[in-house]
Amino acid sequence: MGGGGSAGVTRLQGEARERVIEEALNLSPLTTWLTAQREVWHWDEGELLWGAYGSGYPEFTEYRFLPYWPGLASDRVPFQARAAIATGWSATVQDAVGSDPAIQIACDLSLNLLELDSERRRGPVRHTTTPPPVPAALRPTEVVEFLLNLWPITDVAATLAPHLLPRGEYGHGQVAAWIQVPNVQLERVVDLRSLSRLPESSDAPDGSTAALWPMVDEKGRGEPRDMIADMVEKSGYRRLGGLKEDLHRGVDRH
Image: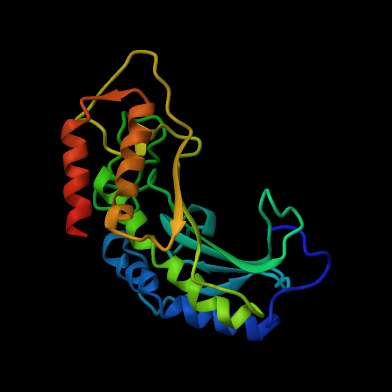
């Protein structure tokens, strides 16, 4: 986003904007999948949908999907999601001022695995110094499944564009996906015991990929698989043949 002077873009502000976004999020297959994750992460019973957070700036709206675990602060819960929606003027290298209205939407899925046991329930030990991986560590195929199930957020952006933007063609854009493992070793939260590792190697800081939207064919479905394999390889892990086969099969089944 950039340029456009001080002129606003959004057609809706305040509660009207929030209602439209909330409905689009709650009707998305993404939310159906998030809700079904209770069977894996064991949060408390009760209806759980997206809720608006923050100050409600005219061009920026934030929502959170926050399951509840008794006695846990929101920044320590094992599983939560955040969606942020921004409207503004698009800007490119060729058009630094920005002349077309545009929408950006991002969805972050945050996992806190350190305090869980092998069944992903709260355990008695915080696994910061125990041998990796932690009992609740993710399988690499799970990482791919998470990324694929976050994909419907792109459809939410397409649904919201005609409601929030005044004019324009809304059938094209860009998408990106990323993985970050802050302040902890990759092998602690992802089970990589089937692999070997080069001496004195260090973790890649993140993994990411980007492409044009919409995807014109099915090739794009493999990108999350390629991203996690690339991140693992850049982190010094080897003997990746079996891992890549598992990731291929996981994507094909999805």
